Image 1 (cartoon, rainbow, N blue to C red):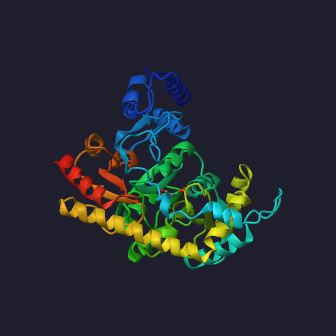
Image 2 (image 1 turned 180 degrees about the horizontal axis):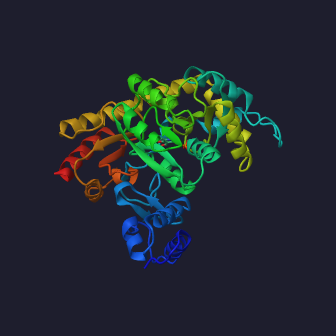
Image 3 (image 1 turned 60 degrees about the horizontal axis):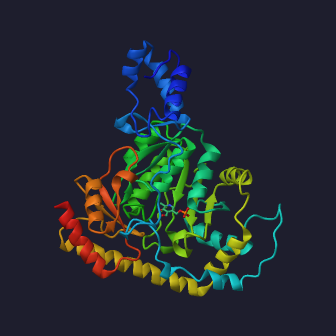
Length: 430
Ligand SMILES: Cc1ncc(COP(=O)(O)O)c(C=O)c1O
């Protein structure tokens, strides 16, 4: 069905087939060698057409699955609550609303003065707070910017430096929104496995040596596995990154305000392009769409340009509220209680699973608990849905190689639910 003698013709033909839905999202394109033989052209010609399809976002490369068609406009699985589902939702990744600060009260304490075009983009009080917060974890002389959440920051940082088709190293399994961001921008995700100490340094090196231009590393509360970098692993990753000075290093410390783990930096002191991104979404609520970005000054300028061409700055109204909340002593108490509560809920589920002989990632951090599986996780998730539970399975979070497991959001799970869920997982895994 695919025709053409030149790379441009093959590209246009596949594009037309995808647009007419003759080729559908998820359909595999023939292996390069087969299509080249069939069309009587050089393999390079087909390979070049496939590369263009990936850059244009019409196809993606999926490790051993080869090149597959992707529908850019079809809504795909997203993070967040399934408000129309009758199931008990343990898939949302949401924080517990009981632990979110009172934004309305903060709003009343905030005296808003109008801001005009051209004024400083970051509220001075918030900037001072962020500088103090970030300084121990950053190379010296960093700049502070704000974005509309971590995902927005990561998207702008990547698009400031990379071009479509570039490879980005990410953890496998990976945070769903990072997978979508890369897809939407036409970047290729290159998966790096994780263990209980975080991203594997030798696999990162392998991916960087093959030309990845950027890496996104989650130092704490990796989503979905919950693991955090050990000091040793952070040093090993830093050593690898020091060998690739042109790679953009993005550290997504999304759970910073609530994390129980120590922060270990992977950013070499003389790194050229780096950014440490800390979101307020989990601690203050996902609607507080603000993330702090600390970076070297060239990266800060590049990010500034990417902001100027879009929303320009994060509304000062929102910044003022965030500043009013984070600088209040009561907020620290609330965050400490939230941390303790999330930790307890996680432990309860860990214990219940342990009692039923189900292995899980122990002593994780974040709002999710990960259960690695040796069996097909989609069928287990389906079996759990029949028993009334909505959980996320690894297939949707896998980058290139398959990952089998279940992600359970623990933020408002009750002791009774822990016991019942553990029983149901045991029955479903059989
Ligand atoms: C790895 C990771 N990064 C970032 C975020 C939050 O992103 P945002 O600040 O855009 O809400 C999450 C939320 O679940 C996450 O798991």
